[in-house]
Length: 540
Image (cartoon, rainbow, N blue to C red):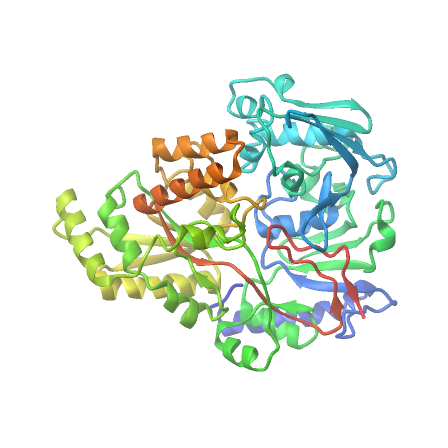
């Protein structure tokens, strides 16, 4: 997804990959079809950057979870129709009150060293996620579990968390209230198991290939940091008969032009679209488009001027032409973000949550100018202060920032500076509220709109704006307890309206999956709510 490296850097990257193709390692020698020297089948996929972490509790972003989703597996796994299907758990039972789930693990589920996958591995992993010392951004997903929030917030004990191994192959999960989405939720990588014995012996097990055990379709055999991760078929995987590939090679190429050039030369089996070639590739019918859920947006630091002022937040929102960003900058046929919850969520009546909620933010440069003047008067400002947009460095993020920079200058007369930085630095700055405007994204963890809206609850670790609204918080928390789905969705619609009236964020556009893929690649799953899955992939 990334661009605006210099031409020399792009050329050097290409040269380095060509050299890698001459390696003596058989799995590195491609014939430009994906079939590797030695007769194996390896898909080469670009994950854009180094994973944040391959600890399922700590990664919690797409480049990390795309890898995790292929070397680990949870109680359930999204099937070809995107429904949660039995995985490590062969079956489960739900108590009449909907508050206790009992999962029965497969006898044949094993780790890549031959050890059995046990209920204790899940207990260990989930409590590790909830441990305050882990500081997992995904921990809030487990809050419906009895005692989970209390333990994660430092107010309770791990012993009081409602997760228990009844025996080696039976896991009991006790909930504070019914959670209709639980079976889908445990298909999320945050709830994957960790080999307990390995983690207790080596707390940094997830940092190098040699110490990572797998229970999924593939196992990690090599990790060249900031370059590539090599996965091979896991001979101990319980469903290995349905895994057709010999492996997957995850590359880490941040520039879309370089990525596309490597795709053209046969060094990659799929590619994103360089924006300057998008129109041509669409016209030639070479582009694949899949539905996806999620949103590209900017966070605003509402704790300090100028974005502690509502009218200034509105002014910046109204000054941005989202349709122009989609049509002229991105060129990937996304939909402009007119709310916070993306498309893909079904309303109880059968329609789209987004359509029912309607357009909650608009482009109105005339009104934006008036709001800016009003906000400046309220803050006692005669001139607008210096403002900087920060983003994790990539060509896509930079182009978005440059387009918004120009719109704010043209429509508001505001000069905005841009600062690209490493993603980890950006995330840390967001958590510490050390920014003014900052690039962000959200990919839902399960197929319910509450998972998007709940990240803006005031004490949620993903909020990172300093924004607080008691009514919003109450609606989200009450929605967890509401058994009537129609009433629950009404609460979520009201909560979204509050968020979009207060605007601690700048929604930009909703995601889709737009990509190029070699004709001989089949069976790659790109779920609307989930991460890329090569379990059923093949090379013909």
